Length: 298
Image (cartoon, rainbow, N blue to C red):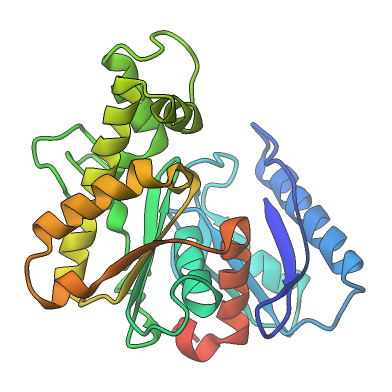
């Protein structure tokens, strides 16, 4: 859990994070959240707040924000927005998907700044995204527009947790890549992460390098499809796996240029996200500070 005080121009004046307590019930999680929020507001001098913006893992009902994040089992149908409204009466409280907030942050103050048509992506434990078209966030019917992780890039590919097959997330997410590489003989039977995989790929391990090419290819195919559909200027790719650099981005570019054949689609630039771990906080704050562009529900 992370919290920050973000100024109207997007600068993070104070921030902190704390581990999500494993196995905690709903009220313990709530108290943990309030504690980290209280710490950063005190550090910033308890400034008058313009509102509360939140990025939370899904799924959730939107915009009511009863949240059931997959990686926080203690919150199932937790009324996060209503509880925050009770805690901060009179202030706007706006909650969106965490990957959407990363995309917003990168568009407002990061790699997509100055562009009107941007896809922001997070490639980490999962693959998520958000979509800004004509300078405004696109929510979709249920708040899930831009969820590029479930674009199908290989109909005969591995099963996905969503119940489908061959989704981008099933192929390119960190744990999925690790499992594939271990099945090919890399560090069999050992505990390993996507960062370990990237490190070994840098050292020349052929299976680790093949895993990174596998992820990059899938990402390139998905971005090509999204670009043909949405006429994008920029795709900003963040998250832990994006730190692999050319190991990921070189095969991504190769696949993108192979599949993005229409003239307009060849203009898209794929760039690393620039805000790092602050992107979600900055994007959540933009739900308040720049509501005209990024909040369409009130």
